[in-house]
Length: 632
Image (cartoon, rainbow, N blue to C red; front, side, top):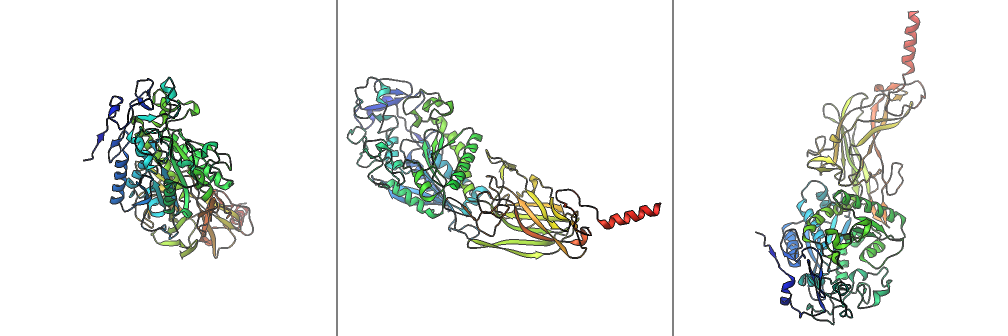
C-alpha cells in the first residue's frame, strides 16, 4: 500500500517551525491579512509524501524515491547522478531508451533534454516533468509512439536540478522572508513585495543555511537560469550578488548548471535536437531566436504545434518569440545558441495577465496576492500535468525526424509477390534493393503493402484520430505516374483511413514493427495509359505522399539519411529532390507494366494525365470507320 501522509502546516502552528517569529518572517494564509500575513484566497498547498500522483504536490524525497523505483523496475529508464549540490545532495538525471545508442537502422540516435525545477519555488515544474516520465514508462509497450521513441531516440530528463532550494521551499511551505529594509512597511502586501527565502526561494544555496531565522544569508545564492555562457551578465542586476537574478561569478560556476551540462552529455550533446526548461508561472513558451533563419522557422513551427496541442487539452501555451540575436543567459538561450536546436523556456500556469486572463493566483479564484502565481492550489495540478504531457511527447516524436518508406511489396491475386523493394541503410546513406521485379498487367487486381520507418498515425480508443491539436490528411495518397508515348500520366488509387494497419502480421498481412507503420490496399493496375508498342513494358512510378501525425512529410529521397546539423535538417528532400526542411512525395519505385495490356497509339498523342481514361487508339478508330463505310 502506498504511504500517503498530508503534512498539516497551518498558520496557527507557526511557533513549531524552526525559526523565531518576527517581523522578518511572513506567512501566506488562505483568508487572513495582517502585518505579517497575506491571504492567497485558497488553501495553501503543502508537500505530500506519496510515491504516486495525488491531487497536490509531492515532497522531494518521495518524488526522488518514485523516480528511483521506476528506474529500478524498468530497463528502459536509467538513473544517473550528474552532480552534487552545495549542500552535498545528489542531482539525478534519468535516461529513457534502449541499451544502445543507435536506432533500428543502426544510425546514431537523436537526443532530447528536459530540465525541471531550476527555480526552487516553482512547484508546478517537478510535477509536470514527473508526469512526462510516468507516461513514458506507462506506455513503453504501446507498439506506437512511445515504444518508437524508446527504440529510436534518447530522452534525458532532469526533474529537479535545484535540489537544495526546492527542499528549502518545502521545508517552509507557507512562510517567507521579506527583503532587508522593508520591515517598516505598514501593510502585508508591501512586506511581501520581494519575498526571497522559505517558500519563495528562487536561487540555489551556496553559503546559505536551512534555518529561516538566519537573516544574513537570505539574499545569497545564484539565479541558475542566468548562469549560462551565452549573454552572461547582460542584465543590469546580473552582477549584484543580492539580486534576484544574480548570474554568479562566471558562466556555469554552479554545481547545478554543471550538472545540467553533464545531463546533456548523456544525449550526447552533439545529438541533441530539442531542449525544454520547465518553469512557472505565465503559461507561455519563451523562445530564443539565434541568427539562423532555418532553425527559427522550424522552432516557431514546432512551438505552434505545441500550443495547438495544449489548446486542445484546454489551455493555451502560446509562444513568445525573442528578437533575433537577443537573450538573457537562460539555459534555453544556451542550448539554442550553442547547439542550434529548438529550445525554449516553458512557463507553466497560472497566466501572468496575458490575453486578458486573471493574473497569478487570481486565475484560481484567489486574491491575486504578491507571488501567488507560484502557489497553484492542490486542485489544479492534476489537470496541469495531464494538459502538458501530450505536447511534450509530440515534440520528441516530431524532432525524432521525418519518416521514410522502408519497404514496398506488391502481390498478385494469388498473393504471390511480384514486386519487392527494401532500403538498406549503411552509415548516412541507403541503397534500394529491388529483389523481385516481375511484369504487372494493366487492369489486373493487386495488393500493395508499404512499410514506413515510424508509426504514422495516432489512435484514440483504438480508432484513427488526429493527434490532439493537429490536423493532417489521415488517409494515404498513393498513385502511379510516369510518361509514355501518349504523354505523361498520373493515376490515383482509391485509399481510405482503413488502409492503415492496426493488427500485426508483417509483409502483406499487417503492421511490421509499430501500429500504423504500414498501409495495405487492394487496387487495380491502371490500363488507360497510351503507349506506342504492344511489346515490352512501360515503367509506372509508385508515388507515396503521406504526413506523420505531427505533420512532417516523407523524406522523398530515402537514399540520404535524414539528420540534424547547423540548426536544420540534412538529407531531407522534397518531391523535386531538393534538400530542405519540408519533405514531399517519394517516387522511388519503378514498376514494370506489360505494354500489351495498355492502350496503343500510332504516334505521340496528347497527355493522358489525371484520373480519366486514355484517348481511343487510331487502330480502333480505323476499324470503326471501316464498319461505318460498309453500312452505307
